[in-house]
Length: 161
Image 1 (cartoon, rainbow, N blue to C red):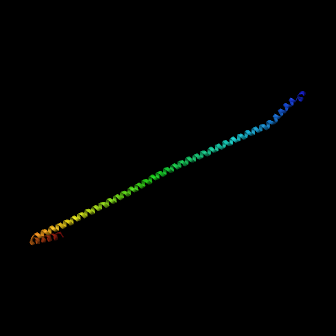
Image 2: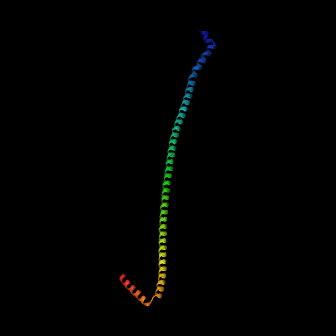
Image 3: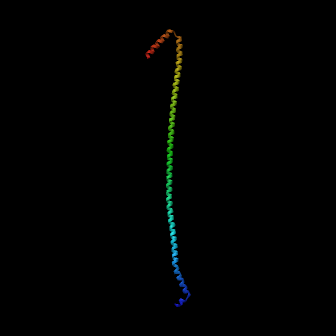
């Protein structure tokens, strides 16, 4: 075995094994440290992704709620516009109906006035014509007949009053 201590190959093997043993620990810690840091980095990325996903879900829900609120507001505006337009239409129809009624009443009043005026005009014309006939009639009858007619008219007039 002594010849083994003198063999350079043996010492080379011992040196190599010692080197390997001494390098395993730092290399192992470097490897484990590198893997641990990589694992931590991956965990951080996963956490960030989950956080981003959660925030995206929250923003999506907010956007959906805003869209729903906006849709409800649009529906409300449309319904208000419909009710206002119906009220305006009803108001216009009512005013138009009142105007028509007023014009109809005015027209009927004018027709009545024209009718009364025409009747009065006819009465006046008839009175004038009757007076002419009476004057002609009295001019053709005798004075005795005139006195009798006058007396009879006075008696009839007294009985009426």
